[in-house]
Image 1 (cartoon, rainbow, N blue to C red):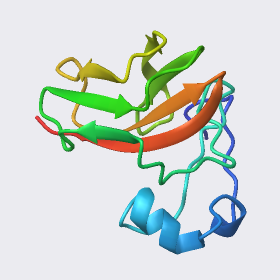
Image 2: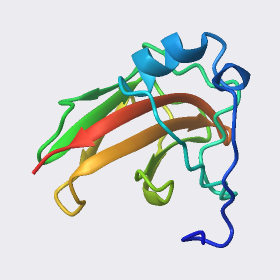
Image 3: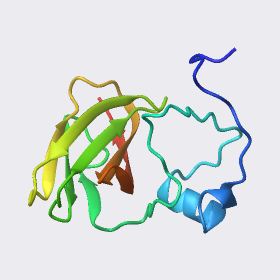
Image 4: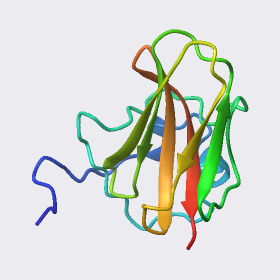
Amino acid sequence: MLEDESSTIQTIKIDDYLPNGWWEYENYVSDHRPVAIKLNMQSNGLPLNGVALANPNFSSHPNPSTGSTTLTFDPARQNTSIAIFNAMGRQVQDFTIPKGQASVVWDTKGFPEGEYCAGLLTDRQVIAVRRIILLK
């Protein structure tokens, strides 16, 4: 039984989602190959099709983080935001980025230890994703 009835579990071919297949997954998503992947297909989740995961202009420091992490990116254009998702695919934080701003500090103290994804969005399209590890 699914934890979230709006979710589905699908078998996917990694090459359908990442042009460089397992190499890209291991270098930009995780260094552990999954036995199975549970995809939470919520409509408010990060739409990762065509996302340049290796965008060097979106970073998080420090990472791993123990209290806060600074997300840096190219100066924001109009309609720029950052969405933070937990390992279950639920959005746990979002930031609206004013035009010209190039960083935001995420105070992680109220969040449990674990793995999170930060998505940089422009005009509601994901342009980069970064994995963030929180430690306590």
